[in-house]
Length: 475
Ligand code: ARG
Image (cartoon, rainbow, N blue to C red):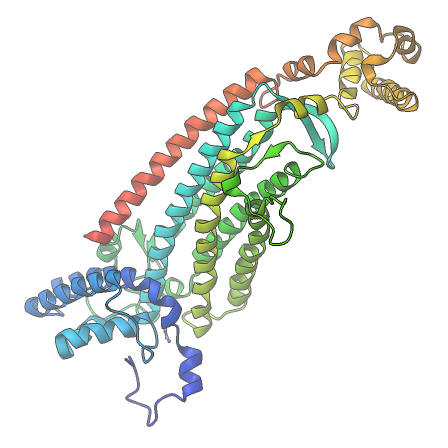
């Protein structure tokens, strides 16, 4: 159904309609469009712009449509330009001309961005809840390995030994920042645009504050031109999705590496692995690779929307129709990826023995020698040089640091006495790293405990918000 046309002598050419049409993708805004129409209707009714009986009929028809939409028995047709036209067609089919009453004081310009805000809030809450589930899996897995040592890396070279629980738990801190970002984003997104009209507000006695409240928004727009132009909330949501994607890609890279034959640290569960069509022996960590790969499209969607917005004149321009598919795609991508990675993390086992054996190799305890000398008041630069000489000597004679003789240590630096051997072991090195946030297992256990607590608080907050949202949608 066309929402315009009287001033034209001809309808749009087929190619024009085909390019204009958004109903095939914006149809998923239908439940939000119906809900915001109900809010708009209440205001039209209280301002007596729609008679009581008509309002009751429209309300009933909208609620029927909501059920039909959710059952899939009412759908957009090829002749519908967008979700708004399709729903008005449905309303008029039920009510005749009265079905067109809702358009008073409202334009698709304020309507579409209100719908999209509602969609975004609803779905970002779902993403947030999946992120908390992933964090629970990461932290529980980390808890299993608090007392297991492994080499820690810089430049993918052995650097210093760490508690493997510490290594795993780090990911949860990255995702906790994403949850924080979502909470912060919600504050800015919770602003209703309804009542802004095409761009200038309305001459009709509307009540934007009231519609905002009914739809669960914190507030209503302050400037009607900004209200119909603003898509910051889309760009910001895409940035958050892209950042979650980056964090997932880093898990993906790690798991892929750790599951390799060369590392053989990670045993990915069969249910989270895939095989090869030609090589019968293969068991590939495809979920980890997909998590890594999907980050590309998440970043692409952000870039696509920011590029579309750059230099765009204010108020509505049709370019803005390009805001939806990237947002839908990023959200869909995360809704698919997060549960798969959560399952993969929860079911992966790590080879404790192999990691522990690798922990002291690659001279990863060299810093301990330098710190030992510093504790004996040797300036760090000198201590660093002496520890380096120990490594060079070991490399020449194919030995490990603890295999150097007392004489050799003494020759390198007079303060390097036999006591140095006490720090040349992984357990000692780990338990000595007691600065806040460090890798000492006792601290790591505390860090994980408090991260789990914070994650549970977040998860509850998100669930409460989601519950309030779904109550609003059902009211
Ligand atoms: N389908 C349009 C969109 O997604 C709805 C708004 C159309 N407004 C207009 N002035 N043509 O942006």
